[in-house]
Image (cartoon, helix red, strand yellow):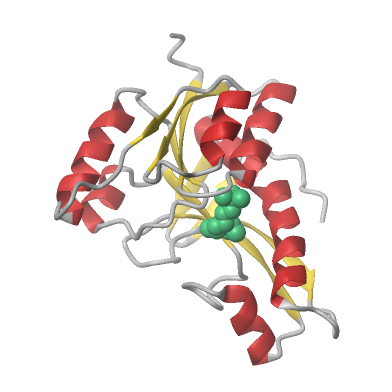
Length: 211
Ligand code: GRF
């Protein structure tokens, strides 16, 4: 394998719509990176079908009965490291990752979160945004730090909240934006074009994103 070509590993638990957006962009654009593997912690993740569609090797790695979180994450990291990833991509991976795992992939681990962080970290972001009455909601792509849904922000997209929005309608419009901003951020990380200084991230060689 050409070492200058970035290697991407994607972790999923569910539908895999972000995986699809990333795989499509990688296929259609001349990325200096390839998706080496997909791992799922759930055997029933629909995203495994997405990996198959794109011919990406996929593996189910489930926590064993009574297995400690750290032990599971060590096994996972061992499998991931086979691919010497320049980017480890959380795409709907529904597990909180421990500090040793996060530290091991420092500045290589990226996540998309369905809110404008630092607002609405955690779960049920769309419901909470509606309850709080905010007029703007959105999505955030960020590098992962040990704290949940924190870490240097790579990109954000803003979505207006409409008077007639429900949790479902708002989720759908935010997801559309995730699919728009996540692939270029993953690409930049995989191609080693992110520069991190404190909480601020610069993306080298980025065409100004269309907002
Ligand atoms: C997305 O909303 C993402 O922000 C969140 O989990 C969801 C994953 O969706 N972390 P998908 O599996 O990519 O369709």
